[in-house]
Image (tube, rainbow, N blue to C red; front, side):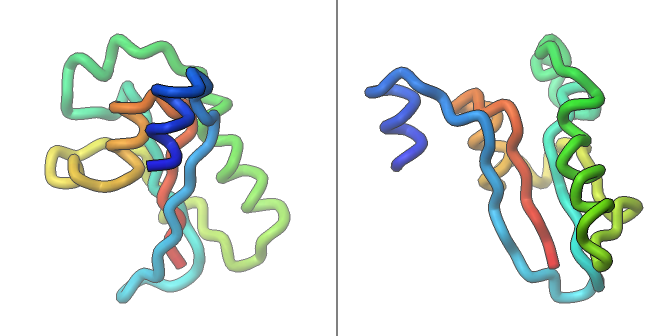
Length: 103
């Protein structure tokens, strides 16, 4: 509701969103992000994105958090994950950097 209010009423789209979860099987900390070029949906591929920018959080975490595992981080948008918050926030509200952090 807050993101919708900011976007539609205040006309100010947040730049960053992160949904935090505990993973039941994998160890360490890792990210799921949104890459338009790694999306199953062809209309997402039209979005302009900077490859360096959307992986910046991963690089920063790798430098300062010993338990962060960049190899477990993924940026693919899969059809089966369409209902996740990170994809909904990214696609419907235009939040540029939308992630799920798992630990």
